[in-house]
Length: 183
Image (cartoon, rainbow, N blue to C red; front, side, top):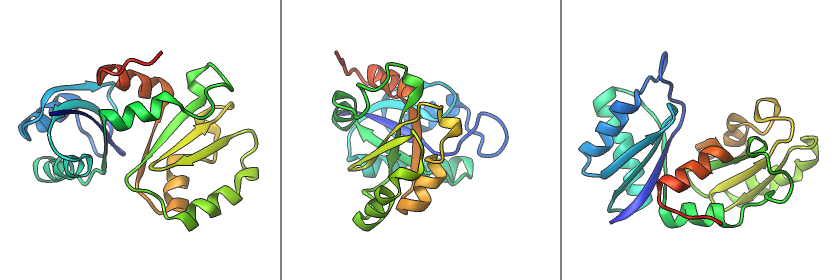
């Protein structure tokens, strides 16, 4: 048994791709996972169970498709993977305001040529900065995420990988829900 964090991309509590959090909890529980909890109203779910992060993501995607009729990408990280993300994040020394830091979670490792092409454009984003590490893109956006060109859609297009972005406050809240203690 392990702890997982599931991150759903492009869902809303109203309108298109509507997935109420109570339905998400019930759906994840129906797959045999335990201790299911959600954070906020934007597709963040923490639960325990067995399987690989990839297999768990696929199972949740399939159940959302069959149960709710929606095609919603799901990205899952294990407790160990999430702990590695929060233990030594880039930009931690630049600003204490969690609103300036974000993590874009990638469904797979981006192809190295795509990462190199993105890195070659680094000077085009003003004060916004990014670091691609494995299946995460760490963002520092001192002017706010709403103002950056390094948004989720841009990163998906440039890297050729499905992604979903969370602010640092959400990442740390999910970390706590997963039972990870960070100094």
